[in-house]
Image (cartoon, rainbow, N blue to C red; front, side, top):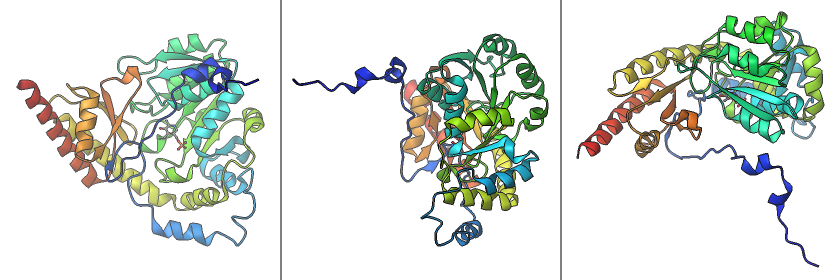
Length: 362
Ligand SMILES: *Cc1c(COP(=O)(O)O)cnc(C)c1O
């Protein structure tokens, strides 16, 4: 007897339909597509990281609870260490949150936003309910509260990726007070602007805050994120956490970065100043609409298709972010880079738009 092996026939429909997260490498471009810290990693911190390694740092399993890192974070964020969990990037924490609270439940997501919430929710077997933001991308608070009734989880990103705007404390307080499920607020970009909602944790036991070392702290390649929540929430999340999720080197790298946080605070100041210059520069290009941002990127649209602009820029070796999300058709996102990179982007955008205009006039 012979069998036809058909793995697709075995998986849930939601997996069959899911498009995996997609990231293509373009060598030799000015990389303004992924909101990374654009500066070189400070060599003195690299030296400290390697100096902290011992002869058995790589042979032994890592500290399963990343205790030293949690203690350092607790000190700096002003919360007890039992309010923090570290993850292999906040992406891993998003998956753990979905497995814990999303599976078998409804997950409310304010869109357009970061795609990993929807992907991890579907992978976990949650029912995803997308609530569209207002025309100016503001949060539709009442609609979220209504949808949140009986849901397992509400997810809000602030500052929101990719729109750049932030929620207010008033909006969030209202959502937290009226939803009986955990409300996740992803603050991956809070170093660059917008309100820090950590103080709300004292009054709101359902608040879960996500933070990352990947953006302001320049550690995207080492995958370190963390979440802040009440111990009763963390007790549940620990049930799904991989035991050795954060490798030894990443733990000591995150510690070294925290102990040198002044260097990154200066990076953030420069990026914020460059963001405002870039915003002003883009506003001066005819036909470009650019949205104000509290983060290290700017959302924009033009009179041409996003794909034409994307490929035009890529032809000039400038990589920005184009989206698959139909809610974002026509929009692109550019990460604030180093000053010279931003100048090249502005000049390239002007040229691409001029060329597209000439081709239409023919
Ligand atoms: C980049 C990003 C993350 C991913 O963070 P990692 O810690 O690198 O996994 C999380 N949330 C948002 C909104 C992001 O833009």
